[in-house]
Length: 199
Image (cartoon, rainbow, N blue to C red; front, top):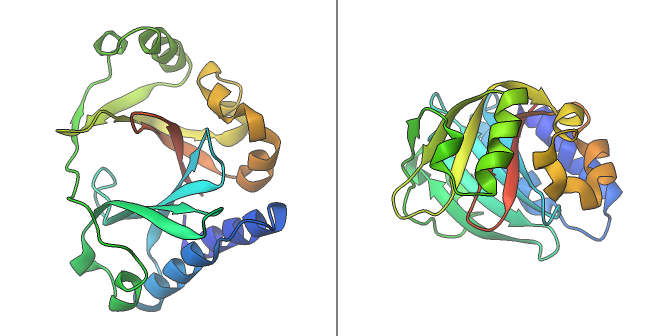
């Protein structure tokens, strides 16, 4: 999504949950847009905690974003920068973020449900039969994985999949925010499932 779409999402999120603070992501988007108005963003929503979101600044290689930062709207703070090429960000954007951890270089392989343990394997096999997975991304010393989908999946259709059960508690609020969004990837960080979205 572009900066305009992301700002619209953040404004709607603020209206839906006025007790939550989305000023940090707005400031980051504005700081990047000053130097790179055509920057492409991906937003990731967390199933277990909708007030947490990840912003990824996507370059030519979406598997290795220039920035992958986690914002907690309840705490009104950035809680992690999983990977970043800080030298590629404007100085104003770098000043808004905490120190980045080591860059996580992910490797891609073909999807096979058999590579996962049960009950995850069966759930992913059923999902793949409905919505094909193009690749699995993993990294050394990381318990998580990313499933890159073969084609963008409209948010309402994603919610019909069994794999979307983690998003059920606040599905109505999320659907208001994400009605036009498309799921392009699913992340599991070792504890929680995230849906990565494009506009």
